[in-house]
Length: 191
Image 1 (cartoon, rainbow, N blue to C red):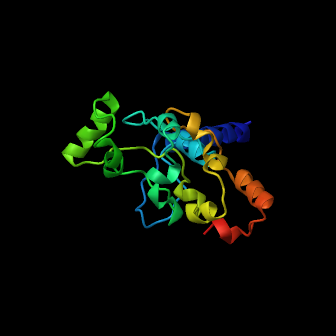
Image 2 (cartoon, helix red, strand yellow):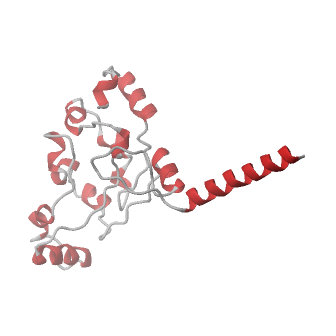
């Protein structure tokens, strides 16, 4: 009987220690130290399953309107053909057209206000890989291979505000590479 009581007491101690450990977030390591730790289990699960909140834009940029006016993605996302990122347009890029076009429209007045203050519009990224994915994605080779923007970003031409509609997971990329005859070697995309 005594050993059963001792085993019960030991189990109670382990449960109490685990509960105490779960209640206190782990100490934060310096940025130079690798750690898989997250402040909460929920954050770890969201990172693992690549669940991110929808981007909340400061101005509801109307992609649909711009595409209807015959603008193309590269007009605003200027670096997409040259390097790894498509780039989020600067307020100066917006003002190239909107110094003259639709200057009395309320959204354009908001853009002009950012420009007059000399600050960038705080756009939020809609797509992108987390650092932990160790993905080295580059737009330029995809553009040179004539991959249509909609293949990875959905039908942005019919979206008022860009939203994440394509799940950029490994299966999505591997399948596309197979269909296009592109390399599926791990080092093509991962570092």
